[in-house]
Length: 483
Image 1: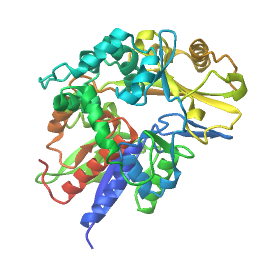
Image 2: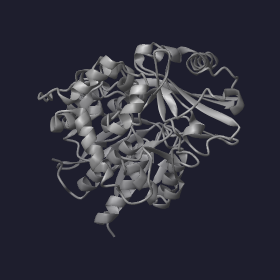
Image 3: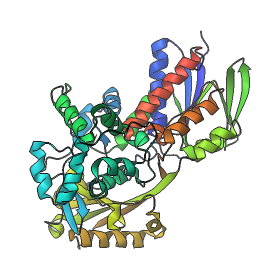
């Protein structure tokens, strides 16, 4: 019998769990027996995917959904038997708003596409002035940028759409995804599709309109999905199903066990054994190693192997945020909440980044006589609010809801979830840094990095990148030399 090849995955968030799942799938396909161990410092699996169920309330401490257009998460749900648990957002006549110039203004779904059937509502929103609309329309006439140099999100969208459209519409949407500063974020690393549209069509708006027409004529088979989807009883069900499947596959899951150090020794020419030293005094010796940890954690582990890679990984900054969930008696806030929620431009100078009317957006989140809201604070340049204790933080958020939406009732339930150094920032030059990290680690075949710190922060991005990491490991274990 062939001796199983050994693999350790460090990090038990969605990236690490997805990597372990894909490892077994891909190794079985090519006939390589493997023995896989997943290690995490926490005793809970799933990383930032945390669902709380309190009576009839369902709250998400971390992400509350994922994009359906990125299919990796939906495909994984199908493999795990969760397809019948996928839910769309509720039907509503009003989707999302922007708090601008003292009041909430409706925002067209997604990143605005100016097409004839959307133009009327967009004009009536008052989100942009006539001069702002005219400047945005210049995107259709302006030539595309030919330089391959990286550009910040702020620079790109101000250049294409104008200052007003950027500040009032695009910046708050970006901040809601990355909790970052658009002046520092790389457009090539965060929204490369917009760069492609400019290069291919000479205009972002023209490219989006063309893509929408093509998409409407080639709709995929299967149930119709809204832009964002979730699971009926919360996203933690995805983690639970993954852990159960990995256990069935014989994967060893070692929670509550931190990695203290990493050592390498030559196994044969061009091959290595990786010794993972754990804080309980034990060690794992494996043929291949996947680091599915935040970049700053991976930096400390690889620094003894290559100080260059360690230094480059340290250059990927992380932002801190908090989510505050509150449940109100529905009758006490009638008329104050509608649609899915709202985002707040940085230019407004408010503490609140965004708020989601959770029970209006998703079914099965609260009883009909209650309204569940989730507020989002912190992020780059706005982290000072996180120095407040929970009571003061909730009081500040309630003040924001009162002044923006008129919500003055007392919540019957409150929870605060803090995420320190949890959101990676893809700053200018991010993709170049990733290439340099790959180069610095290239001599260590079988050592692979994955996770939200590199090529996408969303759940589907992490699942897809985990599958790519698994493929690299299997190809290495098959004897393929790294390129």
